[in-house]
Image (cartoon, rainbow, N blue to C red; front, side, top):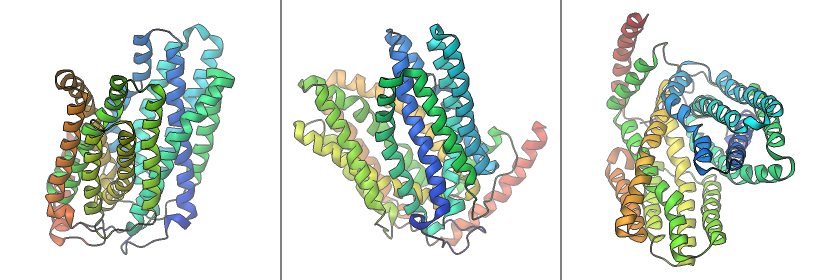
Amino acid sequence: MTATGAEDPSGSGPSPVRDARFFTFLGGVALADIGDHAWVVVLAYAAALSGDPLTATVTVAAGTIPRAILDLVGGAVADRLPTRPLLIGAAGTRVLALIAGLVALSTMPERTIPIMIVLAVFFGAADALHKPAVFTMPRQLIGVGQLVRAASLRQLINRLAMLGGPALAGVVLATVHVPGAIAGLVAVFTVAAILLALVRPRFERERSERQSVIAATRQVVRYLRTDSVARSLVYSMVGLNFFVIPVINAGVALRVAEEGWGAGVLGILMASIGVGAVVGTAVTLRLKPRYPMRFALILLIAQGFGLALTGVLPMVGVAVSLGLVGLTAGLSSPMLAGTAQAIVRPNYIGRVFSVVGLADDALVPFGLIGYGLLAGVIGIGPTTVICGAGMALLMALALLRRSLRTLRIDQAPEEDVSAAAQSDEAESDGAECDSSATG
């Protein structure tokens, strides 16, 4: 199914590589990404100074709670309100919270941990609004046919921010400590807000009607039931991190400890993922596959094999396998994100991505716990192989779906369009009733 909308009937538009509006948006989002990744390092460093592991982990985890609670709220708000004010507001909220935190730290340095926890809560809440809004903006700036390339640029910037943000935070912390790092973050998010304020959408976007968050969630569930292609795409995206995160976040470190390779080797192995991802994402700027989902799913099957090999190969083989994992992630992620932005109806994009994010937030902890329990019984290597095989099987099942295998973002099955339209009419009637009932 193709995204067809009144805002861009032809699906054409300027290339994001040469579009000043998109690059202004990308600049603002890039600075926000750098600030977010740097903030995680600042928060972890301040928490570690407490000397208590439990206090440190609770402090770092504080920001995840409001994000998980507000995921669906953020998606509903992103679909209902104009995007630019939401992005400016999310950046502005971070600026105000950081300034307040800086003042509090200067007057109450002995209360560092409670202050950092409050800041983490504000950051988590702002993140829940920021991420869905980011996904809705490219459709307003770029033609449908350019969304995969736009997603490539967006993810390339994010991956570079993942590498540069923490490194920059480390240098700043070493010289000016936590208050100075927070002052630097104020400057970063202020410039991000200014750049995002300069962005002017090119195309109008259909927005959802005013309704409660519960009604908005029911509406997106009904939409996914009706639109078989969007539903299949969501299913294929939801299970990815369930298999990947346990291996990357826990399995690699456990394998290094088991083999006695040392912390330096762990750093090199993790860096190989980032380098592979950056290279893969950069390559996608030159690619335009006719069937982007087929391309992505085949790559993700290969990623499953790469994950499995990290559990059995020697050190150099593990590094190569992790590089393959990063490379396939960098190649496939823009295809997934760009295709989703193209095929999902504009007034559902924020909520659909929030549903995927919430599912990940809910499933990943179980994946991590399950990995740990299984590794304790059968060993790290076999457990890693099982995760990789599960990933490959999940993607192979998705590839068997003809609707995904033959999906192009420049053509739309008429029956799906008409069904979605009929569903929207019914949902609008239901939403009006919900609004009347809730007053």
